[in-house]
Image 1 (tube, one colour):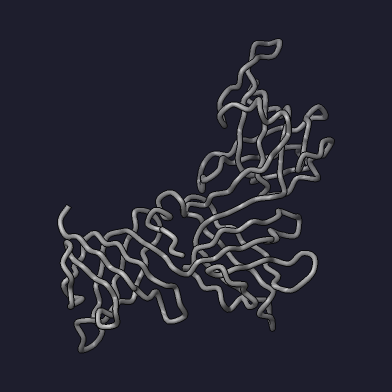
Image 2 (cartoon, rainbow, N blue to C red):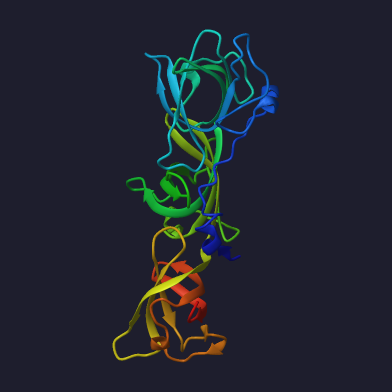
Amino acid sequence: MTRTIGAFLSFTGVLTLLLAITSPAAAQRGPRGTPIRGANATGARPVAVTGIITAISSTAGTLSITSFGQTGGTAVNLTITSSTAINIDGTTGQGLANLVLGMPASAVYQASGGVNTALQINASSKARVTGSITAVTPASGSTTIGTVTVTPADGSAVTLNVNLGSGAGTTTVRLDGSAVTSLTSLLPGMHAKAEYRVTSSGNNATHLHVNDMIRLHGTISAVMLSAGSTTTGTVTINPASGSAVIVTVNLGNGTTATLNGSSITALNTLASGMRLEVRYQVSSSGNIVSFLKARSGS
């Protein structure tokens, strides 16, 4: 199955962390960071924010929530009082000590005199992330236990604890729909959708769905021919967002390649600045192109 990371890098990539909160109070939330309907006795309206818990201070009795998809956005700092209702995974009566960095959370708070007093916090230990695998690190001497880092198109990288063993606490991992039994099957550049639990010991992955077939849209920034060849080499592509991707092209090996709708047989027909769509497979020998469509001009 082919995943679209041209679109992925502009909107899908896109770190997608999903909030899983089912508290009845969630229905009264307004848009994040905006006042919600109703006011207290002083006339001030409560404000709602939804995002990820990025800071907790048990000493100061505060926490911070940063809106989804923001790598450098301003966090909302909240003060916790004895009246703050804290719910985790639908369980009421929780305290600040039960919250963990990285949990998806929503909060309703009162802003007054420069202090944001939390009225209610709904948090979840369940989270999701969609993006590119940027690191695979097996534990020493193991191919079944280690970490996988997934970086969304918009948002911070998430490092997941992965356990391919059996029993409780293991991770179900599939690559192109087939079960994975070794972390060595996963490579940086592959597309991944992960479900995980946020715990005090780390982000424990429960499910990891990976694809090695990628579709990418972007602009050519470099074309490098193999020595003595005009049909093989590499093309560097700059997508609309995210890092440049280098793909390997072999026009004599069944690769479908066109420029402005006409087939091409020489890689040096391509030039920097052209728009390009490619489909490729992430492998240990590189990003191998099977389809290439280029357009010159605007």
